[in-house]
Image 1 (cartoon, rainbow, N blue to C red):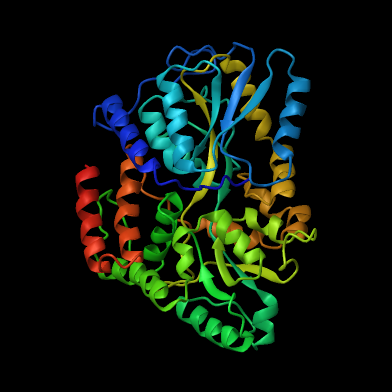
Image 2 (cartoon, rainbow, N blue to C red):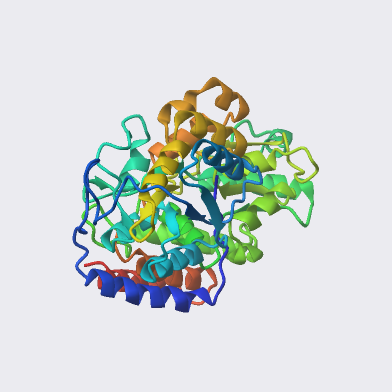
Length: 444
């Protein structure tokens, strides 16, 4: 399942305030948190045998499948010593993070399990918002390496991967075929060439070429990172140091800036998040669209909600100078909070939710990306979602966003500079110089 991030401008101040709390909590060191634990011991004093009712906190479920509540009902029926209740948060990732942090800080005992975005692991672990499950209690040996790595901090599994994700290019098979294109584009240049011919031929004022997610929120960080990586650049290098003020990054961000200027990306997309783009694609207003795997199920609905059902397919993200393009790694994990009570029930719950059977059922219901690697070759799933082999490749070649303790500050710095460039307020080179300077201050 995908948890869509919808931004509200008033959030910037709140996120900045949370960063102050984060800095105070970790003392600016970014060192290994205390805790740990074993099956017979405790993590930060945790009692892993304690049973009782708990709450599971996550963002809004946009899958429209009902799978989550149905599965929790099944768990509750089998688990009389402790029931799980879903506490649904807003669909904005930044607001989800802020509310989770605030409720740990006030020691809310009910919030026992939280859905942790892959980019929050370091921050949540370093500040002891979540605790590592007992060593050996979770078998990740057959799970996607990228998903497990994203849930690991200082070589310890602090969260339990629930879904992974990689960016995909959704494209209109009917339009490509109509205008003589036998394959989807592998580069941005090819995509523009195909768009120019299709849009000129269709003469539809509502039809646009391409869009991703460009509002000032986490989705912008994802899309900008993908553009820079797909031009051979990086935001933060393998050595952990910012290195975004480069010709490659200029080419990547500059391509998005240029496409906004000439209308290849519609001007209105500057306010788009995942759901805005999904709705536009489903309404037949885009030839190409960058989004996550959850869109596949919804865009293929035959209930009248999608005009493109049966008329699209997916491909790897196109590259700018690197082919194929490079996705940012997405996905979520279950985090067991340090302040939540009844950690025995919490552990039982996350183990139940991540069984092979439930991962497959979730994938069938929501077209989400499971963490059990063998499911990408499961006949039932591949039949239902022919895009699964492409999605697996996207995940396997994806790059993580910066793995830093103060990620909230880092992503805001990326968004601030990028958004100004996309709006045409500052040149691309100035935006990257500004970003480099801010990141050097934040990442020590």
